[in-house]
Length: 215
Length: 180
Image 1 (tube, chains in turn purple, blue):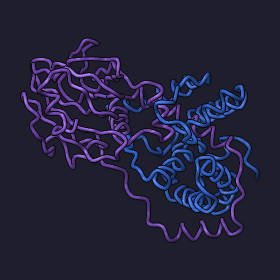
Image 2 (image 1 turned 30 degrees about the vertical axis):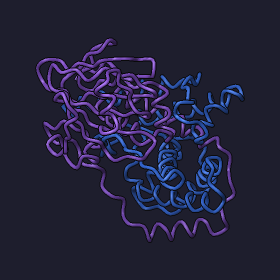
Image 3 (image 1 turned 180 degrees about the vertical axis):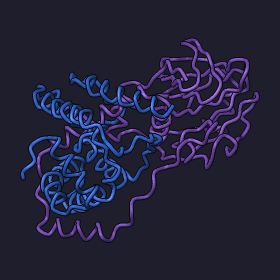
């Protein structure tokens, strides 16, 4: 997998600082699972967090704090095992599988018209995450954004006015971008998308449909 | 023994990991618990919540010590990630999906040189942070204390993060090579 479109520094820093809405964190965690370059950049931001804890000053601990902590250690269950590695031949990295309950075949798709299907993933209310299934060669309706939209390609590829986005690539779209992503011929395109504001579509029909789509 | 360098902290944590060494843990506690609590207080936790969460973070450090790898993070970095996750649970009541774990956990014979270089780079990063102009440092701290929303965070730190990134990138490449 050759990834050409990466996460931005502000997104990685906000994720490291724990300040992203859950839906954006899911896109970041999924991309980092696929991209060693962004994993290394993220770990550098975590190192900055470490330097800040080291430098945060000291707050006085309660008198019995150490004994209380040792008692907690005795009472705590053993650390849970880490999430399972990717299924060989699977499409979804572990963080995404935690939301779908399995790989691609476990997704409960709903049609949103024109052959496009989506599945909304349950996250906190700060932003919305969904999977999109776009048939090869099909366009997603022209839309702009009121907020930030992240789109991570998991399978296939799409093109818009900006560039081509293939597996592992993430497009960071702000409100200036009006685009019509088109899935490339060949394989159907599967994307994970997150937005912190509803999309606004530019044609009448999708705009009427929007409340029902929840996108 | 009073630890003075990043390597010393890592050695203490490895003693907790390998021997469940209570004395080593007490030294780690004395250094890190008040800093974790200060971090949580500055992140908006009140006194009792910060005390409780700092104890929980220290207890998690004990239980997860087997996951610490000195080649990929300094002790302070590792402690930060645990404290941050506790803060998201306790203060924001939200979830933060984590990237897939790589199979690069502690090796039978860890490469001491790699670990030492990473620990030194982490110390240099701390020194660089301390030398930043007050206004700039405060902006970075506010991001990590949770005072800034994601749209307010501008990641221009003026810090040498590239050196740590390159170091970790090399370790990742070697790991991928071993796996293939």
